[in-house]
Structures are given as C-alpha cells and as structure tokens.
Length: 237
Image (cartoon, rainbow, N blue to C red; front, side, top):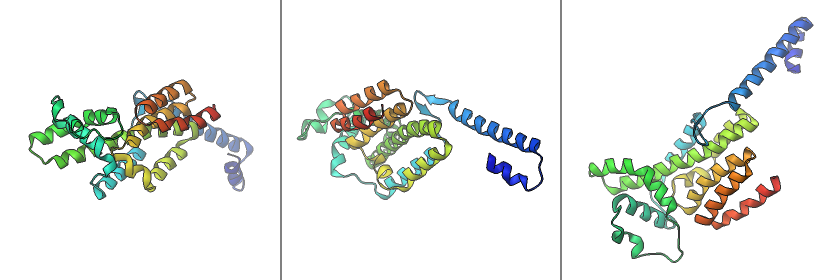
C-alpha cells in the first residue's frame, strides 16, 4: 500500500487522496480474503471445483490416455473392481478365490472405486461395449476421486495462505510427473492418498483429532506406512 501511495506522489496527489487510496486498497484486500474464508463447500470437506481442479483432472486423464494399461502391482485392485462391477453377488466367480495373493489386502479401495464407476460401467455394458472400456471408466473415476481429495487440501491451503498459493499448488501438481500419473492407477498407495489428502485439509485447519482419525483408519485398512506421517503432524502440533 505504501508503494502504491509513493507511486502516486510524483503526480502531485495530496495527502488526503493518498490516504483514501490506502483505505480502498486495504478494503479490497480484506474483501478478497473474506470471500476466500466464506467460500461455500459442495459437500462435507469437498469444495466446488475451480480452474485448478479441472487443470489437474485434465492432466491426470492425459496420463491415462498416454499410458492406458495397468502394471502388475495394480492387478489385485483392478481385478477386484472388475469382479465387483461384473460378477456382483456371484462371489464364487471372483478371481480372488483362485488367486488370493501372498499378502492379504483390503478390498475397500476397490469397493469405493467400483461404487462410483458402477453407473457408467452399467451403461456401457448394456451397449455391449468391450470391457476395456470398463477399465478406462474405473481409472477415470479414480482420477476424479483423487483430484476431489486434492481439492480439499488446496481449498484449505488457499484459505490459509491466499489464492496465489492455491493456484501455484494446482500448477505445480500439474507439471510434475509422479502425482497425477498415479492418480488414476488402482494402487493401495493411491487409495490411501484419497484419505491422506482429506486428512491434511483438516490438519491445515488445526483440527488434529479429525485428521488423526482419518489417518489412523487409512493406515489400519490400506497402508500401515502412514504411521510415518504422524511425525510431522505431532511436531507441528
């Protein structure tokens, strides 16, 4: 504000005019901050999407298009999602009965993914579309869920540190390779990240109890390594 006033001083403005300019500038900044603080949420901790979310989703879908097939590490959750979508209540047809895997894993992530993808997969199934389309739907809905969880964190980051930081968060998340490449991949880490991103949004709000409850649930059910994230949370608290 002082720099703005100084820039006008060379044009011969009187002190009263410069004072009014300062007041108007401060009022505008206060109104902008107030708008961020009072921005409505869409549902629970999830905000309405803005340009940053659509940018991140577009990049995630681009990664999915350029690399459409799954890795071996994704086979368990992808097969589980397939069985939930297409075998449904016929549990004896589930692949897990014949190939249970060496390490027991939770089906919760695949279940959430299948529930969101089910309406879209059902439409294409009625059209007799190949099931590879179902795979694309599963990965696409997972990308939407992942970006939605990131939007919770970005929304609270923007309220805490300003719109510029929120915009930079979306930009940096979009230009780096790792995060959004894995956003659509049905890995335990990806499913756990859905909960971690939401938990961190509560951490920024200083709601440590809610944050730790979400982290504990995700750690017990999906990835035990999340216990390591307790360290920065406890240090900051």
